[in-house]
Length: 253
Length: 380
Image 1 (cartoon, chains in turn brown, green):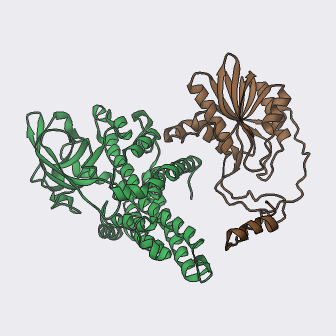
Image 2 (image 1 turned 60 degrees about the horizontal axis):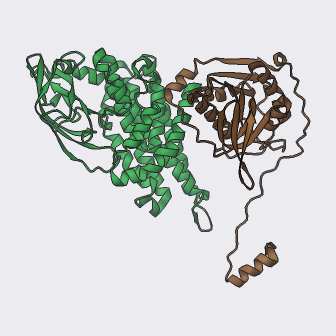
């Protein structure tokens, strides 16, 4: 079985982000970028399934600017076999909407015919949490989102989902789309020799024209603002004062 | 700085391992003076030993610049761990260059730390001046008999295999020394007690004593009587490694100092708002950057096959002096806290000092720089 893993190049989670002065978004020029952490979990899961002999090939795909090649190389160094870069823009500040990404991915799926797509549940830049679901809908496949465990058996995927009330286990007929939650696994450190080997693994570039997809934006960003500054707390003198503040000021009692 | 994509990737990978595994362990390793076997085993799996060993011999096959990047990042976590990486790099470089195919078969075990190595040069009467060594290897049948004593040998308390410089021709000076591969579990090998050092305390350092240790015909590394030259041939790389290690220590100090200055409040404001503290931080940052550029320049010269001796000595000397001065600044930013055990900068200051001493003292580095200047001219 072939597994397809979409990976997104996002602002590194350690970077203190800044809003562009015109409020049109987050400043992405000269900022350290890395693989979306949830996608890293997805790559790890796919590689583990290959190591267990469940999967035969792991293909990673990224959509966006040419610099996303670095992200794909990281996935190859982790252990993916092959990479596809869909060059969709040359502007690092362009963030494709989930529906566009899902449409592009559905074309890649049509070409690659994977038995399973494992995606991150969301990207840490815009937190949309929609691409996996939209892709499943476009393909007419089953979906298991927020996965904390994935087992493949007899043409099905058993997916344990982290839902509000606890854990829910569902059985999906393959092919299917799974999106990863934080506790699915802990991604491995890349071994140095594999960084060297990743250079020799195939990385194919395809254009939107080749795939026959036109990207259309449906959303308009009105403004982007930084979170409000946190204000200093107050010290209370007694339990009575605390209770009264909780009642009258915070309004939580 | 001017790293390529792959070198950046190596830096990132090493850094995330360092941040998650090495840096959090450093304080306890320093306090307990413990050999972190579990970290080394993990590093072996990740290919963090023998950075420049070619792929066909079991290494990752990177260049010297990549090695310097790894050394800086490891040392940013803990200098003792970086120094282990440096030691393995030198030994494996010697094996790659001079070892027989049979001897090279031990490389995978060395790179996975299943076999711990020691590089045995220094003796009580032969520190900086190596020509004073008294350890001898005397022909005996098709092998040799080794006698003598080594001190301050990194890994001596734990090592399995020693690479021992011994005199093989009493009359021939520097042309009368050879390097032997010695099983340190063999009869006649005695280990002295572990030294308790000022810094880099997880590095196990001690003495080795050889009395009538029998060496087989396969114990000689490279050519007979060429040991001194073989040793000198890896010195440039060793110096780049230690220079990078010094940069890593100072970088850790800078990061700690910047964080602290941005959180510690006095007179109602963060101490980072005082110009006196800002200038300390600025000086730290600029000197670290300068040292890093010297390291990268020296490493690049080695990779391009250019004469790198002057650059390597300049990098080692500058970075070592810089690390001591700038970790002292880091302690200064922390004030009283920086003088207390358990605060990272206190350890960094102690860890930095040896970088002015080992791998050729900084006085020797200045002699080398001056000699090169006077011999080859002042032009860069």
